[in-house]
Length: 296
Image (cartoon, rainbow, N blue to C red):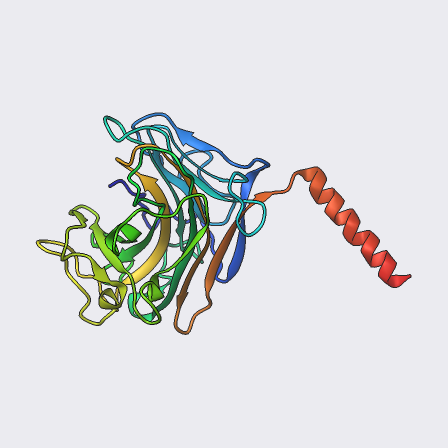
């Protein structure tokens, strides 16, 4: 599985802020369409990958994958983050992600620890049609630093949520879904997540899926045979949502991503298409007229 690799020095240009935020597309309606026809995977330094100065990026895009904040599937406003896989699974299959990296002072830093994580949810939409397996939908991943020390970079990976590892079955299509990872099986009963250990591979076999509540314990969990130990002290430093690879064709979207930690502000992001300049001017004029009416 490909992923974006960031060094401490390379991240200096980034900025971040906690709390609820609207992340706007780079372009007015219909929004952004970021794609890459080649087998070379894009990263945060690819021209056009940055979504404004939000610390969200269009990343890991290859083989005609498509990602962009777009108005095709509006959720809580005029847009959402659309994700498409246009070829595969045979040969060179598509992949596309939208990812957030936490760098409040221009340096990659923890959002919080796994042990303090208390909220993890998002909305997703899968359009009908396509050749991807019926149980697939845009996945949610957490970037994890195993020992919690951001000065060491050889102990990182993902924790990945998807319904396929929580009972399987065909997912709904043509309707927005909200998945609450902490309460997936009912209040206080968390969903299973699996690990990708960068440099070691994918640990997505039975027995290596574990409830989030296990990963967040002091002893955590170490996937067999040679995975990394993620535990309560491990640092969460980013969020990733995406589709592919090997899926076949797929069209869908994500929105309203929420992640929270005990004793810290909630992170919440809503993806919207930036209004056209003319629309902004009209909105400003409307506000001015309303203010004049109130003073009259």
